[in-house]
Length: 458
Image (cartoon, rainbow, N blue to C red):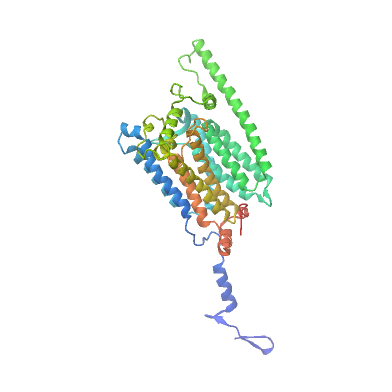
């Protein structure tokens, strides 16, 4: 009881000696999500986990089948052990990343951008040559492929930029300009490291532009600017390469200091020849040589597979097909499992992007939706490019099949992408859950509070 005005006595209810109003206020304060505090996370998406583990199982079986030449030349289990070490490292990355709130990955985007650009520059001046291209960095027993890191870096950067610049009806001009410049800068550095890497980068960024709500005509305008700038850069590089080749030939003719060295034809010449050979195609009557060997034996492997395949480990072409364990492993998969197995693997990758779309549509914020879709697009586009090359729909080029081809950098980077997808599936808000929505708002900075442009349904 407390004394009131005019001699009245006011009776206040208390809880453990604390007035009811004050106790209720304290309870609301405890329940209100605090900045940086995470609510209990949901279980990671089981479908994404299932697809990922299925790809790992296929990888172990088919890499052993495709590595027959290495098996005969060395320890029978050495290639498989090396590959399993990277798969184990990738699994550890997935387990770690799925427990991290997806907002943390945004903070890593710009440090990763600086690192990946530095690695690209280093590979261009001090890199080792792999399959005719100087695009890798040798660090003891480990070979780093910077273009693989760059592709995931661009996805991270674009997810943050496009989410931060959401406006009613699409993306602001500032966001469009920033995102376009990011893609163009990284494309300039990626181009010398392979045309297919550039196409995957452009393809993934274009899809992310569309998902973010950017107008179709704006996307086409941006892509047209890319093509114009890319064509100009390619023409300048080709002219420079032609000048270097002419100088080398002139030095040979005059008996100069470089007369003993063969003239360098550059990657531009190699890319043009590959496109020309692809357009010409191959005939059963053609002589097999070093230029068409991969195409011929890849087609042999696809034909040997038939409908049901020869069975895992029974491939005949793995001993003759160059890079059967990496750039052409899909042909060995089809030879082992047939058309049914090849189609099943294709559908497995497509299910990954389909499931990512379902999870993304349930997010209330733009950033997690763009992040999970960007990661899925990166994985699936790379798989589709690999399959297109192997089946003869695209010119010959080195592009690993995600999680299955031999290659440590690709496995680790793609595993990081899967880990980010699982993080979004755990912490991304499901629409209609007010408690989860409030908790997510407290997690994200003010510039990433934009609503998800992918929201569908109720």
